[in-house]
Amino acid sequence: LGDTLLGLEDLRVVDLSANLIEGTIPLEIGSLISLLDLDLSFNGLTGTIPPQIGALRHCHSINLASNYLSSTIPPSIGGLGNLEVLSLWANSLTGDLESIDFLLMERLSMLYLDQNEFEGELVALPISVMDLRIASNQFFGHLDSLFHLENLVNLDIDQNNFSGTIR
Image (cartoon, rainbow, N blue to C red; front, side, top):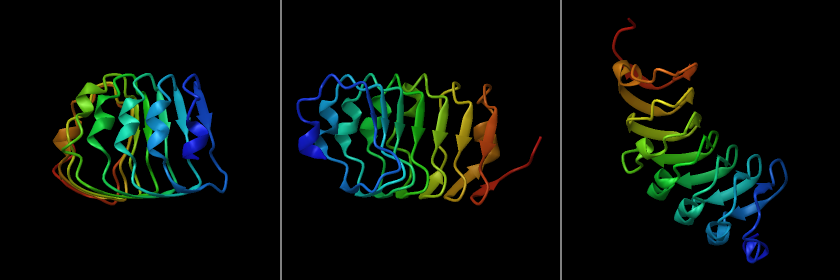
């Protein structure tokens, strides 16, 4: 997959979802500087999300859901200010989210991190988030941390370790 991406800097959409693609996400993904939508979901991808994904500055949607990706989300993803959808659900991603500055992602409206192995307290998210799905992880903290999301329409936080009262 890596060599085939070289020289395709003008690509706007890459949708390779629901195929039988295996291996890792190539480092060359960062060379797709005009990319608006990346969908590699429902494949057999393994390994980590390369930090080069942070070079996709124009990208509106990244969908890497339902693969076998592991390790942490690279901090470089926090620099994607045009990103509206980040879908990483159903992988084996780990760690906390403290190294990612989600507040820089001012257009982020859909964040899907459910069915992974994330832990720690939920970090500050931009008020633009409308759909937050973080179920089936090991997040903890007080529910109050979610109340500033005034545009929130869908919230799925089941099977975590949140505490507090519902008001």
